[in-house]
Length: 404
Ligand code: GDD
Ligand code: MN
Image (cartoon, rainbow, N blue to C red; front, side, top):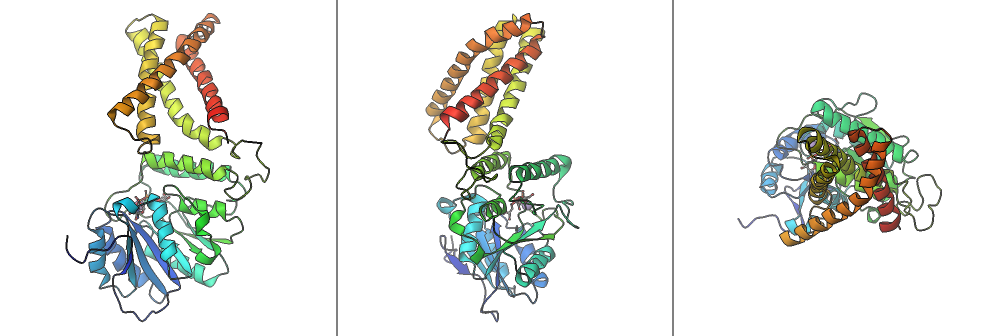
């Protein structure tokens, strides 16, 4: 590598000197492999922020040459540009960690967070900045779900739109009071007055920094500015299914008392019980459970109806299939990276998982048989017995294993 590489987790000036001595607002732009977007963003920010006392701070977790590209293009930019590059072993908290690190290094009294890929139009960010600097508020939320805001062409496909809308509704249902005046708590475009926010109180997970900010600062004064979510300018999204599951875990954690000292309802949770109503934990567990039930029942249908195998034998075979399915999902999505171990460790965990499921099957088969005696069809009875087992398992692990 060449000699002027950006140093480890250190903030470096990419241009200057500047006439703007003391910026009032720091644009915190998290970047991960955004070599194509960064030049476009720099070019678009300058006219949009003309006359505003703002600086740009990239917080970079890239493996490509984003830092070098940013440094090159910053020379032509009149706004002060700085970069905080985090080496591979210093990238705690992913996107959320990057945003917090940026807020800590902000020179302005305001930190305005925006994506690098131009999904947050620079004009919208500038409007947000004007609201922040001109009003007596602590947090300004860029919203796609109020006023003239919209998800526009930014969320490609009905599925992503549904997921975005659905998760926003679930989140608002989980925090009805805290998020009362906020229409887009999942927005990635927002600003906060650093003095009004206790950064040490935040330990966000994944992508949803704003949500945590709002939940942990119930007294903050919030304003909203609407914007139209634009398509990505270049490169690819870093969102993933794993990010989605991380979000569910984050929701669950935020519901615990201690998040703000009280539970959402203001009541104290029972002794030794997490303050959360179990909604979010149930959701995470449920997503995987439901898919397992579907796989199990499809396999049962195949073994019994298609291959003509006796029904209890079919049910036993189906359980092997769905156990492997669930195990693969848990390993790759939920515990990915967190459990570690070599191939042998994975194999041992898999065998233990299979053994446990077969033990439970011993209890389920008589129940299945009894349901069949009441005249229920095989596939329906299978689903009913699996749902019953699923609820029992959840209650057991929630009340006994993960209590407190
Ligand atoms: N430093 C750093 N580290 N930056 C990251 C990381 C990371 O681990 N992961 C993503 N980023 C940067 C990207 O480079 C981009 O600038 C920005 O964060 C958003 O990432 P995208 O991959 O473009 O995410 P998205 O478009 O799917 O999600 C956006 O919209 C969501 C709402 O629909 C984000 O703004 C989310 O925060 C937002 O909830
Ligand atoms: Mn994006």
